[in-house]
Length: 118
Image 1 (tube, rainbow, N blue to C red):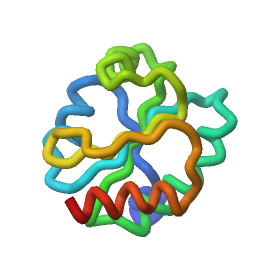
Image 2 (spheres, rainbow, N blue to C red):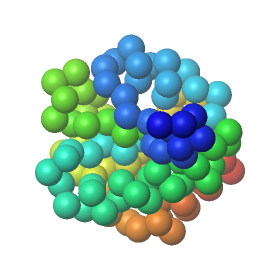
Image 3 (cartoon, rainbow, N blue to C red):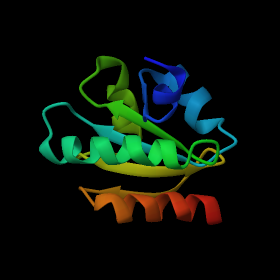
């Protein structure tokens, strides 16, 4: 895979240390998508997340966290993820917005724009 196509996809993370460095310590707003492979609405969101990752590259990050990965269970609990998909918008290490359920491309774009405007 070329670097160009990798840059246009949402980044998958695993574990607390990666979350801290890529999300909490980021100088850009970060949309975090808590998902599972078996979740139908999560699968509908996946191509949207990848498209938005390319569109907002250099301005905002889009991170995907698989809640079924044992390394991510503590993150899901810490952020109160009870249903998936759950998306949180993080800026300056703080959650500034949260959305539960599939909200479509315009909804996800709106969350990113909120993060950029804050």
